[in-house]
Amino acid sequence: MLTHEELEKREKVLRLAIEKVLPEFAKACRDDVKALIIHQDGFAADYNEYELLGMAIKYAGLYGKEIHIIGKNLETLKAAVAN
Image 1 (cartoon, rainbow, N blue to C red):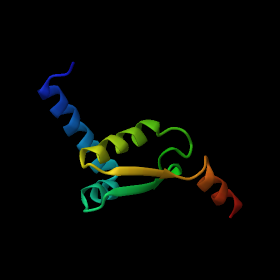
Image 2: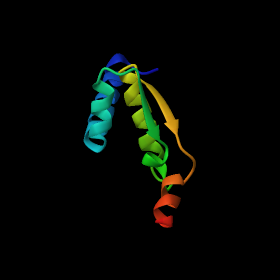
Image 3: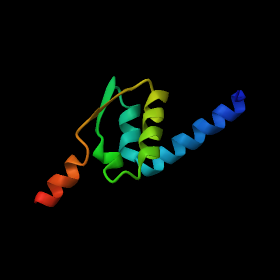
Image 4: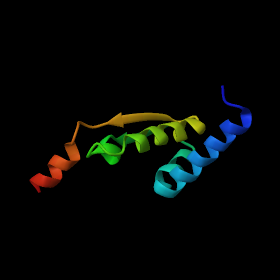
């Protein structure tokens, strides 16, 4: 089991990472909303950002936010190719 200090350190690392990589998402989590809707391709369209998606979900949880993930696999990539 992690100590209180270890948990605080992990939370700080998570906060810094998300605020650097996803500043608009971080701001939305701090806003006065109950839930956030994100498109799954926004994080893992090409299957290399699963860790980032998980981190975003954990970050939102720090603020008590619900996350609703919408979309179909590769939906945005297929639309981009079609155009």
